[in-house]
Amino acid sequence: MRKSLYILTFIISCSIIYAQGFDWQFSARMPADSPVLFFGLSGEFNHLIHNGSLDLEEANCNCGAYKTGSGEGFTAGIAGEYWIDGLTAITFSGLYNYSPGKFTVQAEPLPRVDGGMLLTEYDFTSKIAYLLIEPGIKYRIPGSHLNIGGGLQFGFLLSNSSVHKERIIGDANEPPFPTNPPSYERIVDGKISELNNIFLQAKIRLGYDLTYGLGLYATPNISIGIPILNLTKTSEWKRWAFSAGLTVYWGL
Image 1 (cartoon, rainbow, N blue to C red):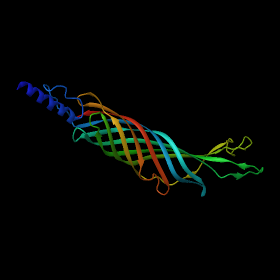
Image 2 (image 1 turned 90 degrees about the horizontal axis):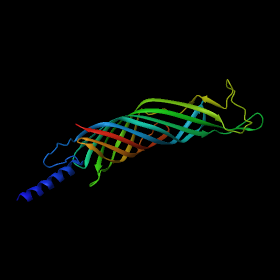
Image 3 (image 1 turned 120 degrees about the vertical axis):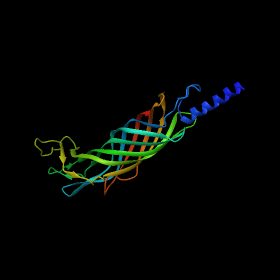
Image 4 (image 1 turned 180 degrees about the horizontal axis):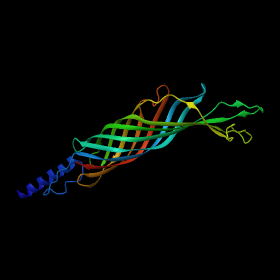
């Protein structure tokens, strides 16, 4: 009878371990209450790919359209998880996102007074900051510490700055711009479509939960951000984010 009781106790304790999703229930004789609500700090490195059709205008003249660009940014802030059961958690976060990008487009060749052609290209460097709010869900793959998850990121524009430059790319005989001093590169008063104050993207993640003690774990993850809305009001500008990050959680 006692042997059967020990076996039953062992089975129940194992089910408790599995139900919590973490290896925190070390002994059936000394049970520990496992938290279900966690808060922590989160950070990501983002490789950004921009694509669309952004018309550049200078002095009411169309100077071409930016098509593709890229940038390296980061995301940092607070995150939380509420575990509904041993495999499923509701996730939520509030994050600061720095989202740079650089575009290049070649301008139409222009005739020079010496009979040659003036070849230039335009650079557009953008630095945008957002406040991100992300609700989502996370699912633990049974029998492992791997998890998959996803959510919707709502971005609220915090700041935006941009610089447009024109650069001469022709041969060595090309004369410089008549700036002071003369230069082969100049800042231009270029304009593109105004940014939206809100953007929306879907986020898909793959992570691994590393436990360090009762109520403490870290989750390294990789993710992809899939754009839903344009970043600008009247032109097409979509931003894809490929990210690698880490979140550290403490149980409450």
